Length: 484
RNA sequence: GGCGCUAUCGUCUAGGGGUUAGGACGUGAGAUUCUCAAUCUCAAAACCCGGGUUCGAUUCCCGGUAGCGCUACCA
Image (cartoon, rainbow, N blue to C red; front, top):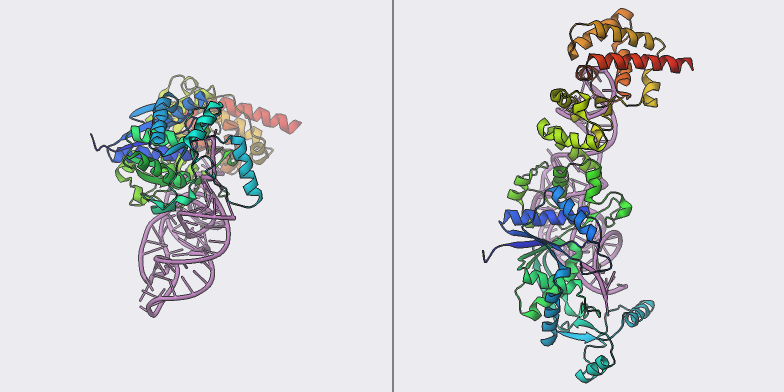
């Protein structure tokens, strides 16, 4: 396995897993599976102030929920500080790094001044060419120092990105960046290179926000005499206003979509299509097919706006086409979260519970719809929507008609959708009213809503006792509100 | 500001020197109908601008513009 492909996803636990991170994880995962490689999870928690352990848990949960699995890790950078210090020491010994005694305050001041004078600011190398004697003296004074990388002043750094193609940056554009903070903590640039090298990462697949960091990391690899990994940068995911996705765009975390009733397979499919088009152009695509078709060279170079509308459509698509036996457990879990129990409601008749779910299936956009707009199919505790009452209960004859309907249904021999429909249509004809009047009024009676599945299908599922009871109750309510 | 990257319908995208510039979401209209979905049909909707190369550019090159990224002792 010497030439094995190795990739990693390296989130920092400073927040929840957002959709951009999830997409990066997904592409790494797809690539690893496609190439028969190893997918490593690494937690970049070197910023002790901003990292939160509970965020790590949340990130792992989100990845698990999405079905993105890893072969190694999670590794924690905070456990690997020794490695970074050793690498820093090696770079310093080789003359590729030097101590910098400038304090953050001094640097901030210089930067502010440069900005005020509209000059471009880059670390000025104040400590770059300090003599060893000077360094010793400062150390003797007890002054803390950071360690900076000595960037070559000549030439440029070029690399071939698997997505963006050949790129080059003049070294003069790169400042002597910090490797080790004055408290001895490594910075991102150090730890990322140390880990990618030590973990023998072959392909660095990450967000395009790291594009401009890449030359720095390449310079470090070269200084160390190490082989370079390949790089593939992914275009960023933007909010509807084309700015980088952030909290103010509403739901951006994977967990938020889970809470909205989005299916993990729908979110995965949707994310896969953000920046990548599988050959063949089919949009609904199962993980196995994604893996088989995944190709970094087919990844787009331009940023993509996250469109929740399309996600919603795709989720509905998954909901509609999911086999009932797969859907049921998810709906049960969703109902349970709302303290509803389909099986108890249907007295243990699983087939009827499933039939109820089926009625809602083509109409549901999210899993949450089953307990929300579908509530009356799983609970006797539901409310009549004011708008529905206003629209469908306004006819003065309705209370009598609905009571008659209840009575006729109650005494009708058969109980199925077709016979319920016949009873209702016969009644409508007898009384000389349109069937639609009764149907719509009855729908509101049975569900409290103007919008619901087909009335007769619902009657069949709910059963005689419940239907007649709900109709009678509705007639009472109609009378009550007419009187008041 | 400096440096870099990117640029096809509102959005995700396909395509590519000669095409009626294709698909999907969304939008509009219609069919169906017990409401709403689903389903089916149809429609409107795009090559950022300016130069060059070429018989011919949306496609290739250059410039502009715009958007985004980086510009931390954040990652």
